[in-house]
Every structure is written in structure tokens, then in C-alpha cells.
Length: 223
Image 1 (cartoon, helix red, strand yellow):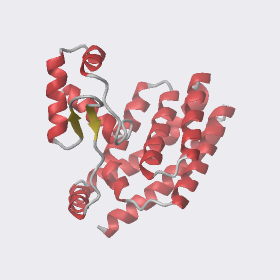
Image 2 (image 1 turned 90 degrees about the horizontal axis):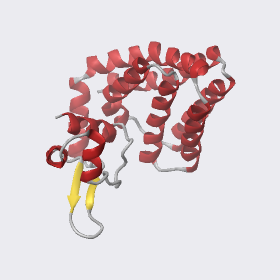
Image 3 (image 1 turned 135 degrees about the vertical axis):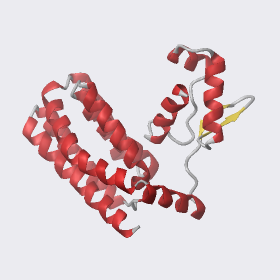
Image 4 (image 1 turned 180 degrees about the horizontal axis):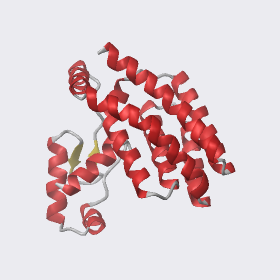
């Protein structure tokens, strides 16, 4: 179902965070141009997948549920990563070639609005120690860089790669040191975009995604 798929992508990418509520049914129906019954069916699909939970009454709504942290959930995640090993390896290799080019184009095509959006994401990331929020902002930063290239194919490619890598990224160990390094690298990317330096943007992104690629390949080898 198209509506369920769109909402699932937002949750998987961390654009909709754990604990956040989906917009009301009427608003979603207007947004997607469908009947409320279609929205209700889509929400039912997401509930059956354990991604959202609907509560009635005052203070109710449809809430995003975060992934469980129990051992059984981790085993299922590892199983999916093993099953999709080939896809993940291809996504890692493709990302190394594609994202630096997207950033290079973004350095030329970015607008003041694009830079403001990127700065907002960086500021929020610098202020949080919450792993889930930081991971969400990390995703938003990469999507925003691709969007700043003003080429739909780059934006779609970055989103698709991120979705393909999501399970493996969830298995990577999180730490304050990882957050600090990632933030510094994002700041270098932003500085290159702000300066309109296409070559510097390409190199900054290549350095950044190379670090992640190395970690993901170590993870895949260990599984």
C-alpha cells in the first residue's frame, strides 16, 4: 500500500522519531489526496508491523514506536543483515561513488534556504547526546545535502541507499566518540557547501562515507 510505504520510509529513516505522533487522519488524507478510510488501512498495516500504536481519548493519537532492544529483536536484525549481505555490500560501494558527486553538485546549486536547513540540523545534532535523535539527524543531514543538489535522482538515490543500509547501521556500536567524529565531518561538509567549493565538498563527503563504509564492512565480516 502506497500510503503505508511512505510512512514506513519516514519511520525507518528516522524522520519520524520514537514517541512522535503522526498527523491526524484528516490531515494525512488531505496530504496524500485520499479518503480517511485509506489512511486508516495504512495505519493498520503499520500497527501490525509494530511500527506505530494508536491510543484513543484525550492525549491519544497514533504514536511511533521505537524498535525493541531485547535479544530476540537483535537476533532478527542480524538475520536480516545476513540475508541481505549482498544488497548491503552493493549499497556501501554505490554510496562511495554517488554521495561525493551529489555533494559536489550541491556546492554549486545550494540556496540560502538549503544552507539554513543544514545549519539547523547541525545545531540540533551538536546539542543532543541522545543516540536515536543523533542518528535521525545524521540521516536528515545526508538527505538535505542531496536535496541541495536540486536533482531528484541524487535525492532518491541517497534515500534508497540509506534505507538499504538502515538495519546494518542499527547494529553499529554507538558512542560519544562516534557522534563527535560524525559531527565534525558534517561540519566540514557544511563549510565546503557554504563556501561553494565543489572539490572540497566532494572530498569531505568521501572521507565521511569512507569511515562508515569501513565500519559496515567490518560488521558484515564479523556476522
